Amino acid sequence: MPADLREAAVPAFSGSYDPADVTFLLKPVTMAPTAVADKEAAIQSGRRHYSEMIAPEPLPDAEYLSLYHAALARNGARLAQDVASLAAGLAQRRSGREIVLVSLARAGTPIGVLLARTLRAWGHCAVHYSVSIIRDRGIDQAALAHIAGRHDPQDAFFVDGWTGKGAIAGELRASLAANALGFVPELAVIADPAGQADIAATDDDYLIASGLLNGIVSGLVSRSILNPQYVEKGDFHACVTYPHYAHADLSRAFVDTIAPIAAAAAPLQITGHAGRRGGLMAGCEAMLGSLLADCAAGDRNRIKPGIAEATRALLRRVPERLLVRDPGDEDVAHLIHLAARHRIPVERLDKQSQYRAVAIIRGLGNES
Image (tube, rainbow, N blue to C red):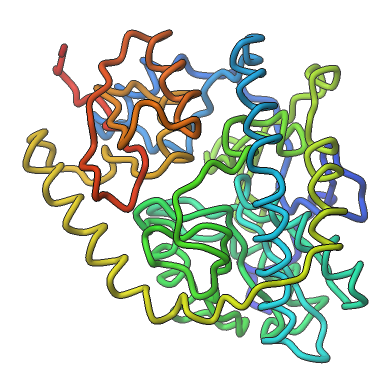
């Protein structure tokens, strides 16, 4: 094994999940958060990459938390059905073999837990790891080396919750284009409105409840960090943990709610997704082109399409505006709440859009 892919010395951990649910291949560190406005200025000026910093993660207020519980009650059964359908599709592709789920921290982690539980309930051999992937920096090669030392890379699927515009899907393909370990960039997601996943349960940009929250639904683990002050050559990418939020943690409650329903569901065939990918990708590119021209933004990274990506933008970035297809849609109620709280203008998105919501990050010097 090459020296730069040696086994990371950091012990694996499971966050606040049951150890049987996931192994996080991340390095917990202690790191001071960077205020959102300071982080945004550092990113857009090019002084620092977003992965070098971590924003504060306050607990949600009672009103926002009630929107999470409402979303879980409203869409939980649908998510369970989609988990079952996706799990069946994965099992079909790895018939008789071990299924190695490699979720992309952290949005992919709750979905990976649900898939692993469902596959095991059906009698399949499934293991689940969660690893870091960072736009413009790639996937954590030390984590992949750890997995390759224990499993056949050909048995792996990479798991995420959804696609926005496909930046992470592209990063995965680029990272593994010349991968000496033998991994194939086969991406599985619940919702793929961008048409970027290899296998998906649906194309619909609907509200997956875990997408409303941060660490308290993802094992009390932050998004991944790649800062040379904390990550040396051969280390796993880093993360911050939030044990002080244990009293508010919903990670196990979320998967405990969905997993039994998924295991009992009759899977639906999802084979038609491959034939729709071209149209979805074209629609995404057309929307991005229109929005880039409209907001005079030369940076695609400022546009965050999809309910979940818009949510993350409103929670962790400094948005200029929020666009929603239907302001009365219950699936965007939490976005309207966040926009009102931060005094972010809300505008209408084309009613024919394949996305229900899009957030646009404020550019430097833009005071609108």
